[in-house]
Amino acid sequence: MTDLAQTAPRPSRFRKLGRSIGLLRESPIGMVGAFLLLFWIFIAVFADLLPLRDPLAQSAPDLLKPMMSPAPDGGYFWLGTDDKGRDILSRLFYGSRLVLFWSVLATVVAYVVGMLMGVAAGYRGGWWDEVLSFLGNVFLAFPQMVLYIVILSQLGPDSPVGMWLSSQGFSTVWVKGLTIVLAVMFATAPQVARIVRGIVLDLKTRDYVAAAEVRGESPLYIMIVELLPNARGPLIVDACLRLGYVTIAIAALGFLGLGLPPPEPDWGKMISEVRGFGAMAANAMIWPALAISSLVLGLNLLADGLREISLRD
Amino acid sequence: MLRLAIRRLASMILIMFVISVLLFLFFEGDKLNLAMRVLGQYSTMEGRLQWLEDNGYNRPLVIRYFSWLLGFITGDWNESAQFATPVFTFLLPRLANTAILGLCVFVCTVAIALVLGVLSGIAEASFRDRAITVLSVLTTSVPEFASATFLVAVFVYWLGWLPGSSSFSNGFAWNELVLPVAALVLYNFGYYTRMTRASMAEVMGSQYIRTAILKGLPYKRVIVRHALRNALIAPFTVMILQLNYLLSGVVVTEVFFAYDGYGKALYDAAMFGDVYLILAGAMVAVVVAVLSQFISDIGYTYLNPRIRFA
Image 1 (cartoon, each protein chain N blue to C red):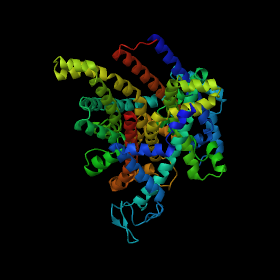
Image 2: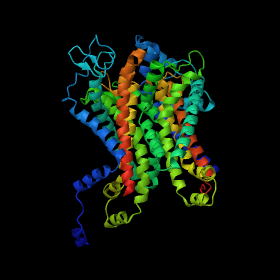
Image 3: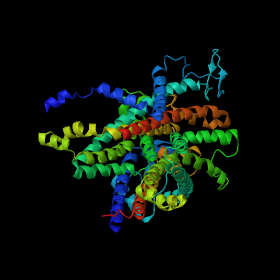
Image 4: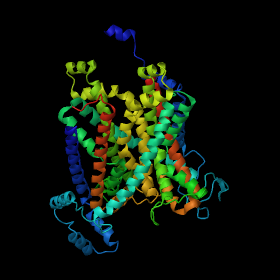
């Protein structure tokens, strides 16, 4: 047994990662998706180093300017300005930080909670399953957006949760962001749990689970060390798609006025802020809509590429 | 079948009960703010407390809940604080408006998805298939409010063909319905198309289709009579199940176009803290969710006779 393990060493983790990236090269769709996603990640990371104007600086004479209009400092407003004379390009680029940070955080939190719920429901079965599945069904019975609106309309800065968070030293942006994360968790975790439960129901009949049980491992160990890592294949694709959904949801919340507080350059809010100005604002509306679409497109294409690869193996 | 219906009904009632209790508890802390919003920013504290007293918001929570429950069952859905009208009479026309919107969206989406899905599914890996797949990924990546933005920019501001708001202020008008429907269809049809395509492609690879082609049946007949019926089982289930997600997008779209429907009413109610209106809206949502699941189950057994309910 030990001889076998020594003669055929397992490929190192990095080697495996490298191989997956190499595989992605074979899927053109996945490559386009990865490129789009990397573009926005690059912008978000290096926004400070790029020659951008202050995204919050207002310029009274330059309201709702079209693309490529000259700026007072001698440069250009490459994508024009919004209703307060702020540079749309730099708002978009700085906004990508907010979008990426909060969507990723919300998705990760929802995923962790959902995976724990799903693996517990699937592996323990019985009452665990009944209670957790019912709990999930309660939240899934709402249309998602209604759930978001109900939760966020009540979790403002003057609500008990909001006040508790502010007393912990979080700024207004963080308080709002964390309540959004909470809302996303309630709406998304049950969906993740449902998928994980399905996979675990299949996995728990495998021999390695029986072996672990015979070894006398605790249920917690079996769930986290044996079951979850083996469920990762379909989950990676799903996580990619779900990150897209969460991104859309957070931007939609920004559009509805339930997102991060002004003057943060939230993409959804950038659309709703200028809508009242009619045809003059067409330019200022289109760019954030394009930005959010391109980011979600990147995630969807990447998910497609990953699925293609996982089916090929 | 009957047992399934009863079980579904029981779980629906249980879910409705839990949700209504949660919502009651959730909005309890917001009472004083609600009174402030009803009476205005500059109302006195005494006035607000008096308003809560007069409208029965100060009764113990348990009594309030059960009086609401009794009223809800008997058709008295209490009064909306924001609009000072009975919730039932307020919500009914809104639901009708949303039903019109939803029906238009559903019919258009299904029609487009079936045609495109079948066209790409019967010729897997062809150029047409690739083009349709790319198109559906592209449109699914544009959320409703973004596609609504593009549509408004093109058809309202640039071409000037359609109105940008759908509030029906001068009575019902078809041209005001076009953009909200288009925005929702654009976002939703890609998913259905891919579902239909995958299902169609799978069926086309099966033995009995090969047999049908080899025995010399006309191609059209093979597609329509042999393939389509089996290929539609999976997409059908998904489409009905997606009604719940459709409702989610409806909220954003209705707010975008000022369309006076269920979604906008619920959004306004949540922003205002209008608890009875939210409760009624949530109950409607649960019924729609459970009903759509039930219909999809029944339809599934009807389309696929191999499946029997235990």
